[in-house]
Length: 126
Image (cartoon, rainbow, N blue to C red; front, top):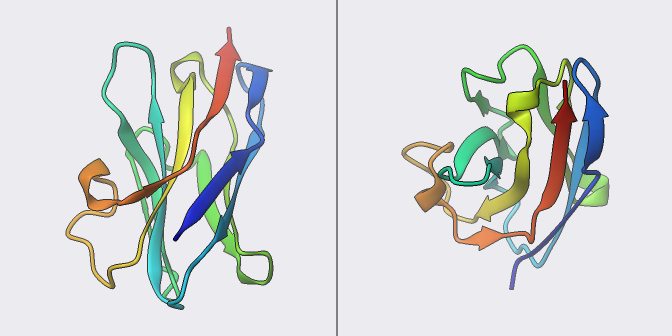
């Protein structure tokens, strides 16, 4: 059973940075997708960034391109999201997600993923 545990959220002023981490366990494959999603109050959960583990390809939402970077450390089975130049509109609960299928139609689409973490809150003040 795949398990995901996020950490690294917090409060920061606009223009600041945070790095989120997602510790993963329970995988039996070396190739799978992982992604970061976020959900603000009253809004749908949206894809922020995704990466194909074992291949390295990445995807980003237009709203975070150039500011956020997704990466992974295989030795630690950990996924990261480096968030720079944060804006108040980045405020949300951030979730880590994983999917063991070898191909996804759209890695930023919520319904593609079967495994989710519990979330970590990011608050950006102006």
